[in-house]
Length: 159
Image (cartoon, rainbow, N blue to C red):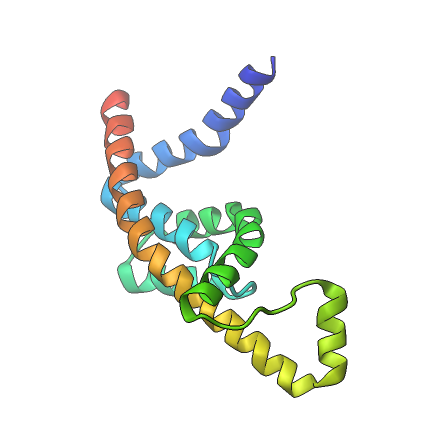
């Protein structure tokens, strides 16, 4: 029963809206790019910035704004899960010193030097953004090609 419930959820919440968009004239190319960019921008390692980034991408590339934002909001749990890996990859790329990331250690660091802590956190975030950029350079084109193939197949199956 759980499998049929999941299949029904997938059809109702994912497949049907995608097919509806394709039927309304959104090209598979634009929709694939909307989904790939929405997923990549949605895991950007600075929480609170992804909605604006996705809206900007949709405007610049004339993409489907609802699609890119739905994907953006859907990957929010992944964004939170990937924060530390992006920060650690950035630390490794830049050979930066270890930053204690437990709440207790961060509070102690802030109490010792508020401005120094903010500077250190900013550097860590910047390193995470660079790591995200490098991975995004591979993810977006690969995701686009895979999604484009799948969307074209979905469209052909509906004709």
